[in-house]
Length: 245
Image (tube, rainbow, N blue to C red; front, side, top):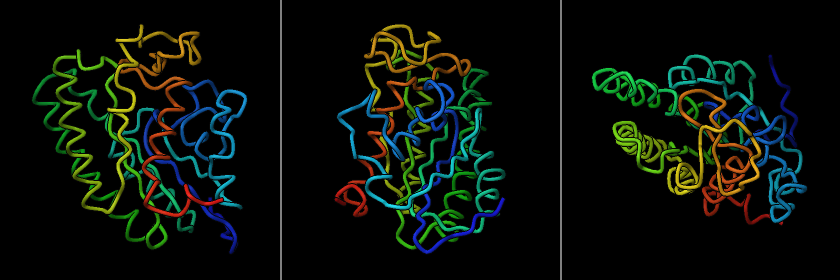
């Protein structure tokens, strides 16, 4: 697919894994990138007009996130797909790490290999984004991995911490801002209820996870709004988008 880039068009590309998809947040328009692009005022009236549609007239969303995507998926599938569209984006968000670290459930050696792959593929993917697929100076936002166990996950929580150190280092190396999902969603997983529950919009709005995606819960509809908020905060001070009228 090739996109024709009109002079007035501004592209926001959402890359990564299930954290950047609508599916587990309740359907079309309810995932974090979709909310960042266009808020749903019926659910989140406090975010009225605080979205890219209001702040970047003519903006278009390119959703490339994939269920189960790892940093290898980002590098070898999503980045080439964006390259084939022949556009340069005004903003990119990246959520990776959760699927990479599923290997931590299989043992220490496998987790170490996944961690090395996170660095290698992350370097290549972010380098391509910064050098050829984003406009000069365009915001690039890399998210940390949240912990649905709220720190009680033992080895998996430890590996999430190591993963986040690597993601922060990658962001620093490629001039990206960090959306700290680990901090933002803290206290709204196991501490708030059952993060493996399946409802994308549970009655308990303090519970921000759903287990519908697989062994590691991902943000539900309420959590997706908080992921959007972390993206929005990361934009502050990096561009005129947040401050625009």
